[in-house]
Every structure is written in structure tokens, then in C-alpha cells.
Amino acid sequence: MAQRSAGLRRPERASRALVAIPVAWIIAVSVIDILAPPDIHLGPLLVAAPAITPSFGGPRTVGLVAALAVIAQTIIGLLRDPEELLSANDQAQIIALVLVGASLVIFCVVRERRAKELAQVRYVSETAQRVVLPPLPKKLGPLRVASLYLAAEAEAQIGGDLYAAARTTSGTRLIVGDVRGKGMTAVNDAALLLGAFRGAAHRQASLGELVAYLDRSVCWDLMEPGETSRYGETFITATILDIPDHAGRIQMVSCGHPPPIVLRDGRPTTMDARNPAPPLGLGELLHPRYRVDSFQFEPGDLLLLYTDGVTEARDSTGTFYPLAERITGWTEKSPDAFLDHLHRDLLHYVGGHLDDDAAMIAIERPAAPRA
Image (cartoon, rainbow, N blue to C red; front, top):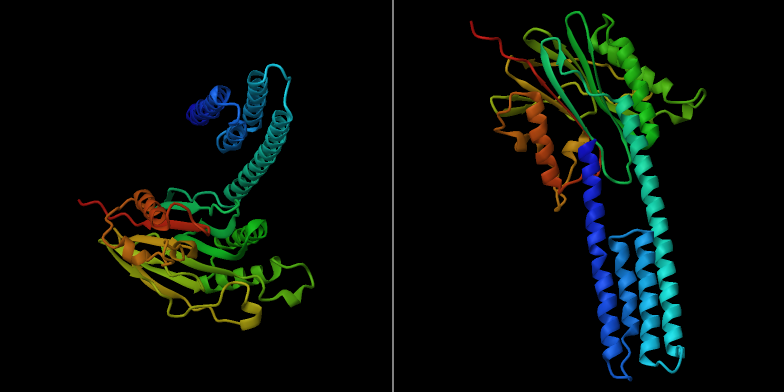
């Protein structure tokens, strides 16, 4: 909290220091104008002082600088022609300064109100996201886990990226997905699917049965009663995994979602589904058969799950982020260290901010200790 307060005070001190620039400009213009020949008038240059102040100051600072400019113009008029109170030219310049200053103050008030509203929206959005999507536990049975959610920075929009894990008697079931659309509607859809997953994943049903249940949940829970015409409008891409506690093969059903990647000794392998299924929510239209794929997950391997916000991130040339290529050779064994590296590399690639939300999960099966 102390660090945050100190961080807020630093910009305030910087803004106060910058006020010296328009004040110095007012003084310089006033002195030169008073000393200049009678036929040279520099008073109109005073308007530059309040004009540049909104770039670093708020309404009060702008109003103060504008008032100083008006006072300076009044003093200039009085000193240049002591016999006449104020000429018509001086009065016109003073009125112009008052109008410009008032307009700038109104602009700053509207700007600050907009900034506060946007900050409030961002706070509510982030709070809703944390409630719906808390970080995964650091340990799930023998597995070590790290999760990361990166919200896009455009107007504080939040998306429907989702993930959750549930323990079973023999392992861990995990889902990662992405709801079609953005905003609070997508968050609500994600919450409904996560609720269905958490309620059913513990049951002793097969992975195919679990996915069929989740598809029905999306079909019926995301629509009002009787809205059969909306079939296919709402869908969720997802990958559902069953990871055994002991070394063995991971079972997977991929529903239109980007494939997992297994990193072994710095070499990534993309686990494409042989039996891909359509996104959840389209079952009523397509009547799919959910067939289970599997792949090996050995001690010492690192499993990476992600949403398309990662692979569809673009650099300045419009090129997609080549995930498998970028992580080749990475030797981080800790899921936290790996995601931290991926986070920094992704933001560096896109130039500092994402255009879409992105979720990432790294899972490690620790190697057995040597006797």
C-alpha cells in the first residue's frame, strides 16, 4: 500500500514541477511585451500557457494558469498605456483568454470524470474476473501448477477465457476454454460452464460422458426457456483433460480449442487431437461423438494449456505469436518461472499490450527423487 501511495505521489510532484513551464512563459511574454515598441503586441502568445497545461494538469491547475494569463494581459495593457485604462485590443485579448481558459477547464473536468468512470469499470471487471476465475492451486496432488490470466487493455473489456481443476480419486480433471464474445455476458457464460464442470468432474463418469454433460449444460443453461432459435449462437471452445496422479497417459477431449503443448527437455510437442469435437454448445445441432485422445506425460515434463489470446497475439507487422517456436529451448522446470518467462516474452512480442484476453496454465509432473 505504501509503495502504491508513493507511486501516486510521484506523478503529482512531477505535475507541480511542470507548472513552472507555463508560468515562466507568461512571465517571459509579459516582460518582452512591456519592453517592446508600441506597435508590437505579444499578448496573444499568452494563450499558449493555459493551452499546454491540460497535458499534465487538472482543472484547478488549468484554471490557475488561465487566471495568471488574464492578470498578465491586464497588467500589460495598463503598463503599455498608463493614460488609458484598457484599450479595446487589450479587452478583446482578455475576453479571449477567459473563454479559452473556461473551455479548457471544462475539458479537464469532463476528461477526469471519464477517467474515473473507466477506472471504476476496470475495477468492477477485474473483481468479477477474480471471483469467476481464481488462480489454480499451486499443487494438485503430485502435480505442480501455475496459472495466469492476462486481460486485454482495451476499454477494460473482459472476456470469457476460463479454466478450472477438480481432484478425483485417481488424478486431476482440468478444463481450459474460451467463450464466444466478450464483456459481462461472456463472464456469465464462463461462470455457468465452470459451475457445471466443478459439480460433475468429481463423479466417476468417463471423460466422454463428462464432456457430453458439459455440452448439454451450455446448450440449455446459456439460453432462456423456449429460445430454441438461439442454438449455435452461444458456444465455448474447450479442452478437457484427465491427468493421472502417477506417470501415464493423459486423456483429452478437444472441443475446437488450441491444442496443449508438452515441453520435454526444451523440445515442445503439440498434442493435436485425432478426434476433435465441435465447441461446447453445438451438440444439439451436430450430435457429436466425444472420442478420447491420449498422450504421454512423463515425470519432468511440462504441460502448457492456453487460449487463443496467446497464439492470435500479433506483432507490429500483424504476424501471430509463434508459441511452439518461441518456447523451444526454454529450460524452466518450475511452472511459475515458465509462465513468468512466457508472460514477458508475449508482451515484448506484441509491444506491451494485448488486444484479446489470454489464459495460460503450466503443469509439471515432478521427476521422482533419486534414491
